[in-house]
Amino acid sequence: MKVPVLVTGGAGYIGSHAVLALKDAGWPVAVIDNLTTGFRFAIPEGVPLYEGDIEDGALVARIIAEQGIKAIMHFAGSIIVPESVENPLKYYHNNTAKSRALIESAVKGGVQHFIFSSTAATYGIPEVSPVTEDCPRQPINPYGMSKLMTEFMLADTAKAHPINYCALRYFNVAGADPQARTGQSTAGATHLIKVAVEAALGKRGGVAVFGTDYDTPDGTGVRDYIHVSDLAAAHVLALEGLIAQPARSLTMNCGYGRGFSVLEVLDAVDRVTNRKIQRNLEGRRAGDPDSLISDNSRIKATLPWVPRYADLETIVTHALAWERRLSEIRPDA
Image 1 (cartoon, rainbow, N blue to C red):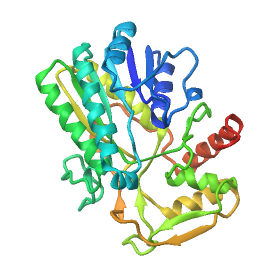
Image 2: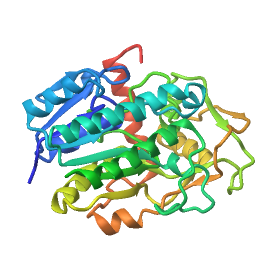
Image 3: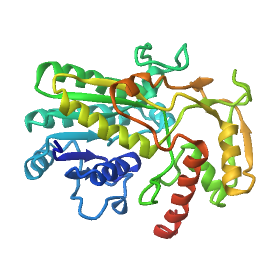
Image 4: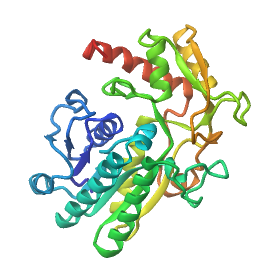
């Protein structure tokens, strides 16, 4: 049964891909976004967009009533780790306090299912890799902690009210819609593949490589990169899982279970673009683990999730195509 879904932050990077995945699969969908970091052009034609804040209880209540919302996919929030260290209260407001307000609106409005955009940052610096969902959650920055606090709120709420939830802990999200309908559009984005394709197109002078002395094969940090469209598909399947078993809630990693180093990623961009990106070697950033790779066995055992784009060069190719498209949409990008 395809119920009406409200996507928060649906004009942003991951949220807009979730909107496409829902719409393509025939789900009724609406979006709330304050457009602080989102873009109107990312919303497909025919999808209602409510410009406003998830903290506005009256607005969220109106959307739930007007659209008959029965499920929420929550992507709205702040995501830059260094900024969270510099401005922790912003993150506890945007990611935790506003999520609390949204959850309260969901309960009051009779929303039955809640999908939450969580993060591998809840693990902090794990002692093992690949990382399972049962590894200790020890965030080392306000970003990770703000997300973990929301997970706790959802768990407690699901025990007290007729709502179930799925927290999906993302690893490194990258790429863009294969049809170039949306992608990472934020100016000054810090995602490695986004930065690298910008450099390949001459929008940046080079790419900073933070740390070359990690305990990895080439000395640079290793991360698990997941295509954003595969991630969006996981959200739709998770929603189907919540609807099928309303007494069950889920917490699952979203990654491919394999990693690539910074230099391997840059080499892949070189191959796809047939040019050499300038590498600027710099010191380590505080709190960056040597390697962060997901154990994705739980999501594969729980959902019929079969990634379609689990190939680094495919991820880069789609990111590059979107970057070129973005230059047409926003010449200043």
